[in-house]
Image (cartoon, rainbow, N blue to C red):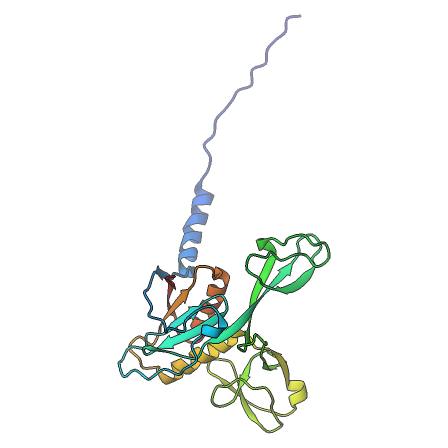
Length: 264
């Protein structure tokens, strides 16, 4: 019996791209609406002679007030200091210590270690080097010139830093005191039970930066460039920190953000 070859008819059909195109028509406008744009530039900033990333060379003197209409608000961040400049002068620098929070992918070990430049973080149990994608967050804790971390009061319910009427972070409160939570606008709180309503925690440099920015906003709300801020960072400053500073700037009503690189 002769072998018969069975020929299968091959029919070509065009791929239907309509569903994909419909998805793109909907997705692209949504991405454009949700996108955030920041200006990136190199800005020449005249720093005081004592400028530097070392704690001994930070700005300590209050600036003379400038009578011009421009605010010229600038946040300068180095590897250990954050300084705000406005009206042609600089506010006292805020020192900080940097901690990285990791969650290990292999065993879900959750831990926080102090960041040391050039020294990789290691798993506390296995000793293996942690990867960047395992880093969950970066914490900046305000400290004094001797690198002692400052502890200040936070609300136990919402974890909000509290200040007095002058915007100064508080270490202690008594029943009957009036304090203000770091919200925008500031929320007034009458203290009933200090032991249950408040707890001392390391002062977040991000929170204190927002506190200072809000005080600048309250004082110079009508400035010609009262919605603008320049964030100037040294090359070694991680972009994750810049992003968190941008968030604090927006929360303080400075939505027009320019990112600059400090010249060495």
